Image 1 (tube, rainbow, N blue to C red):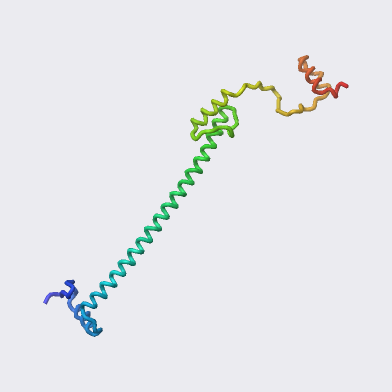
Image 2: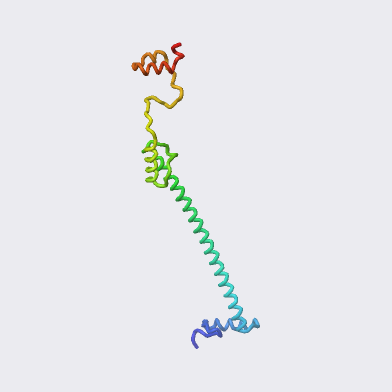
Length: 165
């Protein structure tokens, strides 16, 4: 006889193993068909559990992928916002206007908007020493008399009448 034997299901089992299984089946009082049905049902349950586990893992994987996509989107938006602020500062510095009024999503758009604003702004002369304060800094009578330009000296006297009363 060969080293393997065929069992009723057509599967080959090593010689001797089938004999011990057959004696276990006979002692349990179950027929081979009943054993086959029980084993088949057990295998179906195991396959179903494995399929559920795979489905659960795939579902978790999809959720993780979705979360990663959301995180990447947030990172990209934050990077773009930072980059946009840098571009605004650059365009504003180049045009000599405040960055807060610029609109656009690219450096080119921001530079074009800055140029447009710059072209539309009236030109204001810059006055040396003008700090933009509404009250000029206090001067003394002697400082006013030292002003060589007559018109500027008269303006200074008009701004400080308290020194000449």
